[in-house]
Image (cartoon, rainbow, N blue to C red; front, side):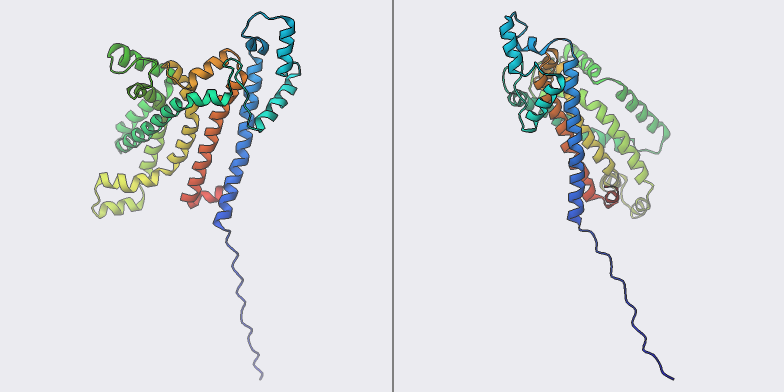
Length: 330
């Protein structure tokens, strides 16, 4: 009897694992492609909304002064106002693609210079608001993550009330109490450190309520995880357990939320700066809208949209790197 030789089984080759760097680059590229659409939509909507406002652009350029028909015609031809609205839009969009935001109709200076002169004050307000939001949200969420129903109900009610209050109304209330009545803080128009307190509180109140709610719910979910019971069995104190173990597991969803909040704070700062008469782009854009100063209005809107886009891309990238569970959703 002939015994045949058994052929060795061939083991299928493992599929090559995708390179992490290439996948990360694709994630960033997809986010950047979507961001182009966001910026284009912001510019387009602002352009047509400004043109839909009452009044003529040529009157703004002439400072609403009486001018001869020859002067008006020369201004109209110089700024291309004699073409159709679509032609003006395409011309402006072409200039924008080269990085040229144009000159302010009212200030008679480049838009970049006008925004750059007021931007540091706005960034200081945004930075103070972010610090206040993070610190207050973490403290309140840790305190509110209790199993007692009345504690959770109390925190939920206060958060809902804060979210329902418009920031400008809260700013006026803070001014009335702490500036006009108690005289603890300067009233209006100051860029000092103590003059930053009330605007930062007014701007941070809504984000604090939202982030606290999300973080508190995350903490309560994590407290039910098996590793928490194991840590308690090892004698880990409750404060140390929440601060060092539970908090870091619940903070990832909040990171994405903070990215969205950071991107939207520029727009919120505009209103707060007007309420408190602070220097910044708030009063700049208010004057631009009132005077139908299209290049300046679009410049501020584009800045706010760009900040929103950049921050959210950075947050998405960090979440992709930190949490493998998010990579399948990219």
